[in-house]
Each structure stands twice: as structure tokens, then as C-alpha cells.
Image (cartoon, rainbow, N blue to C red; front, side, top):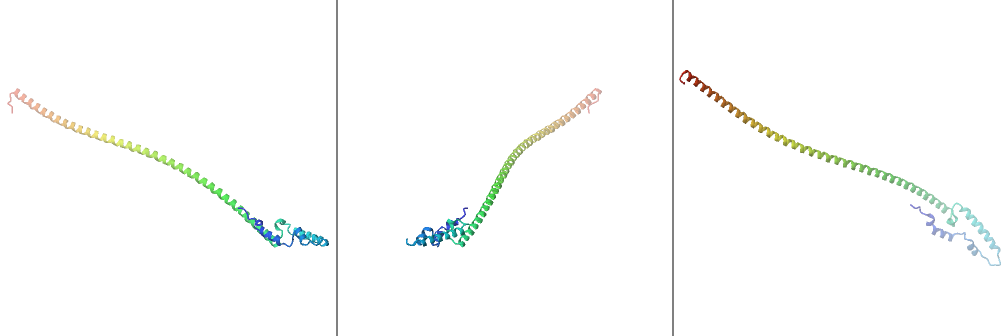
Length: 206
């Protein structure tokens, strides 16, 4: 921020003060005090007084540039100095505030960079977690497929077991039938043998 220039803002007043100042320049004083040629002595005295006045003005205005304060009183010069001091203080405060703002901006930029880095890290971790989740989902699907295959094989084995059990029951039934037939055949053979023995002994059949 550019500090206001009090000299520029007071130029119209300085010009007016110069026009109304009692301390005129050498040509103006010479023109005002000019006497007829027949009396040159007052003219020399006027120049001496003018030199003294200009020296007094120069001594009074030593702290400030004579080109800026010509025609101004001590109070106005002091006011200008006070305003300059206040302006310098404001400028210093503005410079410090600008430095603080710049520092805060740099800190905020650093924090933003840190947050962006943390966000990128979190995004990378999220992508890794999503990849791991997809892998786990694929493994779960594979396990479910293997489980379904095992269930199908178990059902097939149960069906084969039931078939074998049915065949065993059929075989047991056939075995029982064969055993019954064998017993009947044995009984018939025993009966036939008894009859043959009776015939040989001459015993009549029962």
C-alpha cells in the first residue's frame, strides 16, 4: 500500500501561501521597493533586509526542505512533521501486517499442501482397501463355488449310497428267498430220502 504524500496534497495550499507570504522573492521585493533612479540608497538597504529575511527563513526551515515549506508557519510545519511521523508509523504497521499476512498465507499454503498429501495418502489407502476387498470378494466367490461343488458331490454320493443301500436290500431279499428255497429243497430232499428208505425197508408210505 502506497503511503499518502502530504506534500502533494498540500501543493495548492503551499502555492497560496507563497502568494500570500510577506517574504517575497528578490525580484518581487526589488520591484515593490524600487525607487526612482535619483535615490539608490533605499534600494541597497532593501536588499540587505531581504538577505536577512531570507537567512532567517532558511534557519527556521532547516529541518524541512525549503522548496516544500517556503511560506509556511512553524505550526504548519510541525503538523506536517506529525502527519509524516504518523504516516511512517502507519506504513510500518502496514508493512508488518503485510509480512504477517504473507507468513499466514505461507503457513496456510503449507497446511494445504500437507492436507493434499494426506488426502492423496488416504485416497491411495482407500484404493488399496478396495483392491483387497475385491480380492476377498473374489476369494469368497471361489469358496462359495467350491462349497457348491462339494455340496453337489455330497448329494451325488448320498444318491449313490442310497442306490447301494437299495441294491443291498434287494440282495438281502434275494438271499432270504434263496435261503428259503434252499430250506424247502432240503426239506423236500429229506422227505424224499425218508420215502426211499421206507421203500427199501418195505415199510408202506405214511
